[in-house]
Amino acid sequence: MKIQDRAYVAIEYTLSLDSAEVIDSSQPGEPFGFVFGAGQVIPGLEKGLQGLAQGESAQITVEAEEGYGEPSPDLFRDIPREHFPAEMDIEPGMVFEASGPQGPVRFRVQSVNDDVVVADLNHPLAGERLHFDVKVTEVREPTAEELDRLRDHSGCTPENCGCGGTPSD
Image (cartoon, rainbow, N blue to C red; front, side):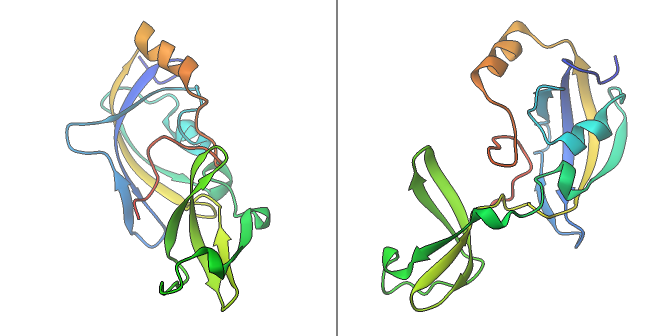
């Protein structure tokens, strides 16, 4: 069976950036599984996997537009410095988690001065070209349980991603 819409797919993968820095990978013996075409992975990865069969390998490059998008200027926020502990030394690149109306929100510090911390709420991989080295370990019809899980999740978008491919900070 070849990878097509509504097939269950499992892959072993390594994800790297243009710099060759490896930022994520599946654990040995624990492939990442998903239902193809259900919005559980970024569009560029799905396009690169389509038509592959179990046992096949591929190197897939995903441009930012088909990954996590380009950084949006609308997702930068000025946060008063007083909202952070006074003794904390805040530097660009630091990652924080805050409570938002829909749950926890992670942001990266873009810049900081005496009065304001500029928070970047874009996905950490926004604007990045992604390089996947994948091996397809399984392609089959999804089980009823796997299809039921789809109804419980909204899928993967640049704003809301619960799938693989996010770096750990």
